[in-house]
Structure formats: structure tokens, C-alpha cells
Image (cartoon, rainbow, N blue to C red; front, side, top):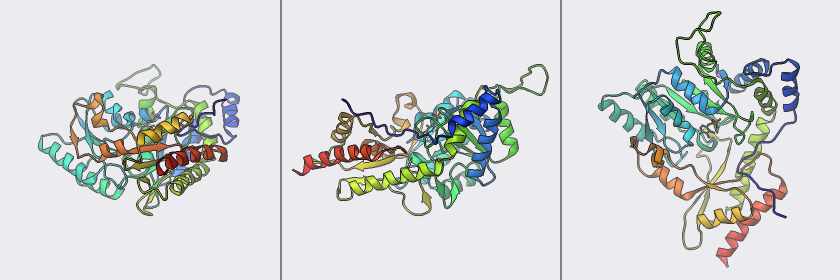
Length: 381
Ligand SMILES: *Cc1c(COP(=O)(O)O)cnc(C)c1O
């Protein structure tokens, strides 16, 4: 019989989810918004601290879109975006018929490179258009260089949208990711560190910004008993059932983070004597990563080949994938400006994401270990 598939990232249930869902049924709130949604927002606000105001929505992508709408990004406006990310960071720029301007990564955090960010800003301003927003990403749970990026954004007075979809629970110098930008974004998709089955959140700095986001997320209804609209609206609010799942999940968020960090140690131990393979680690204590995914970089030579390792995992029915393909190399985004060199591209061609789920059993870890050991032994013999 074939082994059960081990995925890169699967959520784990706390066991409390069903009670909150039951409450949604008991309250007869089987719709978007409602008591669970309000409670879920409060729990997140307490967790994030730093006077955060949270709007729960139906996906992380919607949250990014709402951030752009809230900042007034429109036709032909330019928005700077980290190139090395998942396409959901950049797609909402196109929803607004705005123009993405992509920026390379730096090698320490793999996130937006401050030098190239500043170069992009200066050149866009020279060309006559100041960027309307900057979308920076905490990739794989590792905070970007917050001080440097926000100092530059502040100097040119450009708001930052912090794509923290992969980084709930991560922090920089003790402050939670998602709370640095004018807006922060979380995702509760099924593969993230916690799930609502599908969902996201927009983190704002004020009650007014939160209320405006709720306004947009619920069809932009003006104050009137009849339905009246002066602005474009969206149907983006989180469902009361999904928020119930989220409330249950919040009870094990810290445990999930512990086990993701443990997976990072697990890989560090396995690869510790392999000079061609480097397990990604944060640079210093300023950066606290939830290690949503553990990643490795491979220096290929005649002995060690990335594709062979990936296929060995696949044969054992274990998911393993290259790093995100940078946006400036995607057919969809090929015509847009790009600032940088080949750092992101190099990470894409050398990197692999390894199974990092919060739920992996000892048996599953043994299966992973066996694949890696066989792969390494084949080359040593
Ligand atoms: C998952 C993800 C998103 C989108 O979140 P969804 O909830 O799936 O819409 C955005 N940005 C990054 C970096 C992500 O990993």
C-alpha cells in the first residue's frame, strides 16, 4: 500500500473548532460577519498588540486588495512589490489597474532589498510618478529588514502594506509582524500556520481605518435604509462559521509555531555535515521567524543535485517544492519594471521548501529522514 502523502504544510486542529462552529449554529449566525467574527478579531488584536485594529475577511488576497483600495490606489498608479513572493501579493495591484514595480531580495532574509527599494523609488520619482504604496513580504515567516525598509518608506512618505500572510506569530525586535505597516495582511488559508479553511485579515492602525475596511468589505453601503452606494463595494467579509474555526485555531497557534521551529532544527541536524546544503536560519535575535516553511539552499555539484532530491521526495509521496518563482520572471508580469539583480532568481533556482507541517508524527519524520539519508548515501558511496 502506498504511504499517505506528507504535505509541505497542513493545519492541525485544536479540537475546539467544532464548539465555536456549533455556537454559530446555536446563535443562528450562518452568514458573513457575526459574533464569532467579532470575537476572532478581538483575539487577534490582543495577540498582535501594538494598538492593532483587525478586519477579518475571506482571504489574504482580499485583505491586500482592501489595503490598496483604502490607500486610494487606482488606474496607472505605481505600487512597489517584492518580487520573490506568491502571486497573491501582486495580483491585487492589477485588480486596481495599477502598475506593479518589482524589487529584488537581499540574501539575509530573502525579502525586499532596501538598496534596490530606494533605487526604485528615486527612479520612479525621476520618471514623474511617485509610487503610491510598497508591498513588502515576510517570506516563509522570516521578517524583512523592518528598520531599513520603513526608514526608506518614511523618508519618501510612502505607505507600506506588510504582507504577513506567512508570518503570523513572527516578530522583529519583539514586535509582531503585521503591525509595522500602514496596513498588515494575514492569511488563514488551509496551508498557513493557522487556518479558517479560507480567510484573511487586514490589520489597520486606527478604528476609522478598520471601519472603512469593513465598509468596503460589505458592499460599501452608505448610511441609508434603502441601499445606496457612492463607492465600489466588495463582498469580502469573513463568514461566521470560518471565524469559529479561527477561534479554535488561535488556541494552538503558539504550539504550531513551536513545532515549526522544531522542524527547522530537525533539518538543521540532518544536514549539519553536508557542506553543499544550507538550512535557512534567521540572521540574529532581532528576527523571530515562525518558520512557516523550512527551506534549504543547494550548491549543486556533481554529487548533489536539487532535482534528484526533489524527485526522491516525490517517489516517497512527500511534497517538496522549489522556492516561489519571482514575479518579474512570471509571464503575467513580464512587462513591468524590475529593480535589482539576480538574488531572487538565484534563490529560486537553488532553493527547496521542505515538509514543515505542525502535525508531523515521529513516523512521518522518519520517512522524511530516510529519503534524505538515502539521497546523501547514494552520493557518498
Ligand atoms: C498565502 C499568501 C497570500 C494570500 O493569502 P490567501 O488567503 O491564500 O488569499 C498572500 N501573500 C503571501 C505571501 C501568501 O503566502
